Image (cartoon, rainbow, N blue to C red):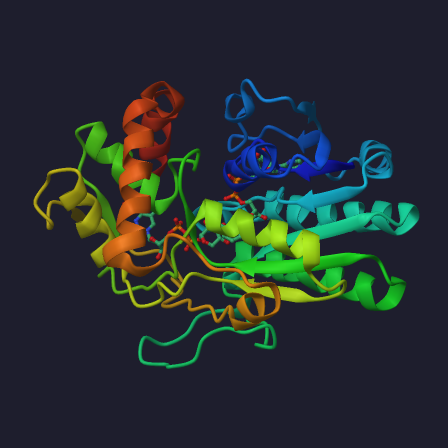
Length: 336
Ligand code: NAD
Ligand code: TDX
């Protein structure tokens, strides 16, 4: 039996990971979540689960040392995760994404426990729309925003701790996730809850940007495969081959699935420095570990994933309603 520490487990992907672990991986007999419960963390995401939730900062050396030392495996999701916020104030991004990852790595080095670092496609920068290439495990780092630069910094720390100190770590870089429990500041839940709240969906700029959308359950299934069978020291790219669908297409699909005209959205100010296209090549993960995404292809799997996600936000209005006015007021101040 194995004990598991999940940092950021009260956030979107971390909470889905805890749920996935409880329903599919009984070998993890004790699960602890370490989460600062920032605006993005919500204890309700773990309601009813047999999990110890410790409220704390991953930069707290003593607390982190104690928790890492008493769990066999640490999976590190905790981060400041929203690009738009990083443009308004980068400082929490440096604190959590860089100093927090450093604090965890030092604890892992002291205790020799297993570590998995969760990262993003954005560390590779962006591709032009007509560039046929996709990101692989060997793509050069080239981050654009304060968010992606701090995630890139955290990845470099993990690489260095693996090479210099031989820690037992793996890493994964995944593309844009969607699914239940995602904060309504993010693209897909913002549009769904706009429609539910009687507001127009909001598209940045022309909406030509491409994100390689993946359902959160497909991401988390991949993380478990890496924990079970991934090679120590290795990085795995995770992506579900949706790298041809632009934001305009996604927003129209959401409108259509929610019974609106496909063009029933507004154009708003673009994001400064907006990355154009992300595309992931997950061949290594598929070949080595046999991973297959369930929610792939925009006309079948992604449509099904979006329908389920829309139903979740419709059925869980109390989960998002209170935050909605504040999130929209912040966007309105930015002309978004
Ligand atoms: P999220 O913002 O929904 O959740 C982050 C969680 O971390 C929150 O619960 C928050 O309270 C917690 N946290 C923040 N600072 C902390 C600190 N100093 N100490 C302890 N806890 C802290 O983010 P998410 O979308 O679930 O992303 C999780 C991870 O996955 C991040 O590392 C992110 O970079 C990565 N990622 C996200 C996506 C995506 O599309 N959302 C894609 C690829 C990778
Ligand atoms: O209202 C919006 N309208 C809009 O057009 C919002 C919030 C976003 N957008 C656009 C910007 C992006 O091109 O949609 C796309 C997706 O935006 P986000 O949901 O903010 O995601 P992104 O910036 O691509 O980053 C996400 O994927 C990689 C996560 O937030 C990161 O944590 C992850 O690392």
